[in-house]
Structure formats: structure tokens, C-alpha cells
Image 1 (cartoon, chains in turn orange, brown, blue, cyan):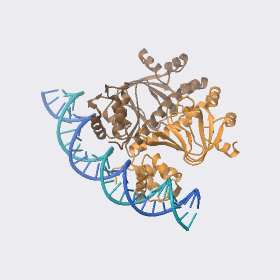
Image 2: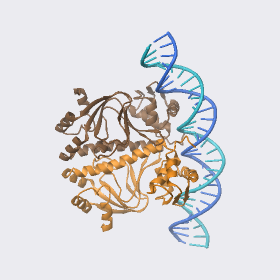
Image 3: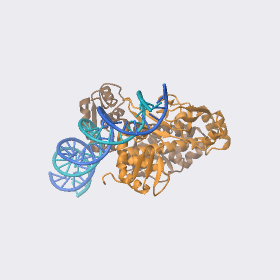
Image 4: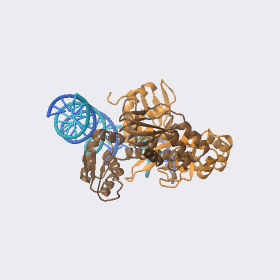
Length: 230
Length: 230
DNA sequence: GCGATGACATGACAATTGTCAAGTTGTGGC
DNA sequence: GCCACAACTTGACAATTGTCATGTCATCGC
């Protein structure tokens, strides 16, 4: 059974928060709530989508296995974020696999329920399009990063996204494994290590999962610097 | 004024083809039809989205300009494909810019029209989600390619997608500039040249915009080969 | 036909990254 | 406390790619 605090988190998710109260109640009451252990599979690539997933706690990664066996991390989600919307409504197989990278609480909204609500109220469609667009946008941003930035610059941007400060210094916690960070940024763990050392001169100190940024603006300049400048 | 043949092409687009006849007619009658010259801008990143775009003829590229000035090609569209769906319905700025890479015929469907139809009939929302999902999927595939494949392997896959044959040999035409192909595959034109030469031993001959593949299956094996194998 | 232009190929070189191997450190089990 | 294991770092080396320079070729305007 779901705790009230979990329901409160679900209400704040991008997917649900803009919906009218009575729809949210209906979705919450029919949703399936489940806990996943670290490393547990949530669904597999090619599997048929039966639900939309909302993360209430913990971290989830979406990834693809290339035929060669290489793993490509597509996105990483946490509390309040949802995934699988576009797929669930179309009865197509998942293009990616999902796995819990830490212990997780996840709410599953059965897609038939969402579909039937959508036929009642087109506003639901708009809401789903909203989350889908967010994902689309983040994939586009990732593509740009991979194609137009060096490894160290991608790491710099990753660090900047962890902080909400505009200027000055700050300290942030790395939200998950360095191995996963490396995958998310499209590099090997060794390259991530090197990228971190390359950021030292720009005022970044890494200690365990703790990062210290001396000057946010300086780091931002570095991330947006033309790679030909030294 | 739109030719009947253009309307016929529009009807076959992924966006429209699954809609009921009367909706298609309404959308077609209110759409704006326009021709673009090679190199002409269709819209710019950060611009507000006012329409969904359907390509009737020619080629269009979506790209992002990094703050450094580097250009990252996000996708390339041609006849029957549409873009801008998720953005148009949400009154948010475009995350990418669009440019005609050859002379183009493009149909623009005003987003307010689409929105009002959507409130009448939720089926429209499903149709839009369908095209959006297609884009999402293709971005995911691109990410996997960039993260898990070498340059030459990406080129191999690109060639394979141009052919509809399953095995044996074949000849295909490169649909656009090698410069654009390089951008689309996340590399410099020089690297594309090298990738082509690397594909020679696998039975690929390039002559101008004409490619000859000796053995489709052999090329497919190459594309999916573990990069550690030689 | 001729020069200008842009697309493309190629070689040399530098920078970046993957790979392999070795060593360090922290964590959890017992 | 000690061991085993996984995460992480570092160095050496090879492979890949970007960069720069040069040269060829086709197209286009005149």
C-alpha cells in the first residue's frame, strides 16, 4: 500500500501536476506501487509497454544494449520524473531497458487507464506530450553535448547542472556512481577520471562523491569554451 | 496554392495518415504551403513554435548551435516526415533550428488549429504522440550509435538504412552532401572519408554520391562487430 | 573556354580516448 | 579484525579522430 508521502511526491511529478484533481485521484488509486532493489530490472528492451512509470524515490537508468554488447546509457531519472509515456500509449515495444541503480520506489500507471482517461479528456494528452517533450529536449541536448563538446566539457556541464547557484563557489554531491556518470556522459570510467583531473586547474576538487567548485562562472566559461582555445 | 499531388503526399505522412478523413481535409485546407530554397532557414532555435511542419519534397536538417559555435545535426527529414509536433502544442521555444538543405516543399499546420481539433477528438493526440515517439526513438538510436559504435560502424549502418534489401549486393545513392552525412553521424568530413576507405575491405565502393555494397549481410556483420575484433 | 568556388580526398601531426595492467581504497561479510 | 570484492585512479600504449595544409575535380557564371 502506498504511503501518503509517496502520493504527495507523485502529485508533484511533471506528468501529473498539471492535471485536474479528480483525474489525479483516479490515476493514483489505480496505480501499482513497487519497490526495486539496486540492480533490479524494471523492464527490458523489446518488451511490450503496459504502463507509465513515475519515480518516487531512488535512481533509475534507461539504457540500450548494442548488438556488440556495449551499453549506452540514454537517461537517468529520479524522484518526480517519469518515463515510458510515449511508448505506453502506442502498444509498441520499449526501445530501451530500465534498471534501478539504487533502491527505488516506483509507481506504475497502467496504460489502458491512461488511454481511457485520455479519450475522456484531451488535456491528459497535452500533459503526456509535455513530459514527452521534456525527454525529447533532453535527448537533443545530450546529442549536442556528445557531438560538439569534449569529455571534460561534458563533465563540467554535468557538474553545473547539479548546482542551482549562478555564480561564486559551491559544493555538490555526485548523485550516483562514477561508473554510471561516465556512461551517462558517453565515456569510460578511466576517461571520467582524467576529465576530473583536467578540471582541477579550473577550480574543481573531487573527493569521493563530493565535488567542490571554486567558481561556477569560471566552470561555465570552460564548458562553453571553443575546444581550439587552450 | 497547393497541387493535388502535394496533398496526396501530405495524406501519406505519418502524422496524418491514421486520422479520419474529415480531420485531414480540415487540416489540409487551413495549412500554409511554402517552397524553400537550398540553405533557407525554416525556423531558429529559441523561436516560438507556431506550427507543425510536414516535408512534401526535398530535405530538411534540424541542428543545434553550441555556444562554442559548433553545429550538431540532430536529424534530417524528407518527404512524408514531420517535425515540431511536441513543441508546437506547448507554446515553448524550439530547442533546435531548421534549415532546407535542398530546395523544399513544406506544409505548415498552424498549432492553434491542431490544438482545437485535439480538444474535439483525442485521437489526434494519439497521432501526434505517434510521430513524437518516432522521433524519440530515432534520437535514442542515434545516442546508442554515438556512444557504442566507431565512426566506420556508424557509416556502415547509415548505408544499410539506405537499402531495403536483406542480403546480397546492392547500389544506393547518397541522399545528400557528404558534409551533411558527416554532421548527421557526428564526425568531420575528413573522418567520413577515412571511414569510407575503411569500409573498402568489407566490399563498399563509393563514387560521387553513388555507393556500391557487395554484400549487405557482410556489411551488417561489420556494423555490429565488437570494436575489439579486427 | 576559363577562372572561381566549394566539395572532397589525403597526408602529417597533435590531441583525445579506449584498452590493458597495476595499484589504492572503502565496504561488507564473516 | 581480516579478507574479498568492487570502485576508482594512474600510467603506458595503441587506435581513433580532429586539425591543418595541400591537391584534385566538378560545377557555375561569364
